Length: 120
Length: 107
Image 1 (cartoon, rainbow over the protein chains, first blue to last red):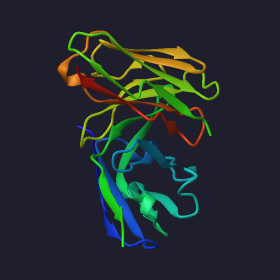
Image 2: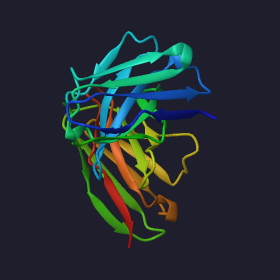
Image 3: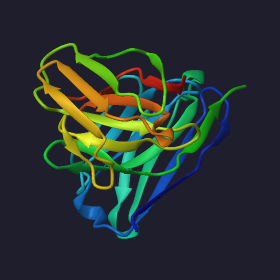
Image 4: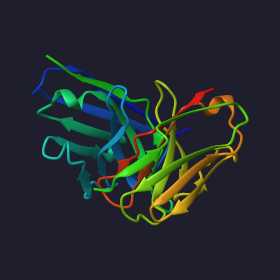
């Protein structure tokens, strides 16, 4: 049974930092692209970033570029999102998901999410 | 950026109804569309990928069609477990973008 479990969310002041983690079990983590997707309270889904299996290909959504950094540790089957210069509009649930390519990129396994609240 | 526009934003339907949700892309994206279902407090679930391919375990009453800029998700006979919010997504180019969602409610 494939599992994805996020952690690291919490309450942080504007301008602060937070590091999210995601641990994956039961699939060949190092072969797979991984992604972070977020959802503001009562709003829709927004893609945040993705990273290739070997970590060499990375891309970000416009709203987080320059502030967030995605990374991974394949030995620990872990994905990370370092979030700096946090703003109120970064508040929401952050989901970690596996990116499958068959025959197009799609997110086929999701975690339950971790909640980030940016407020003074 | 490619904009994905869903219609309607919400709909009310009864069990057994046929339901159709549309998604329009701001430029051609061939078949690079996925559809997700999300229930309150839960993570999204992949239903369809590449416009019409059914994800493993998803019931066959759910189908997808379209190409280019116009896409459709159809539920042939709505079941109680189908009441949820549905999102289309393009992965033709980054930033990957989602439609605003369609909430399917009980009539």
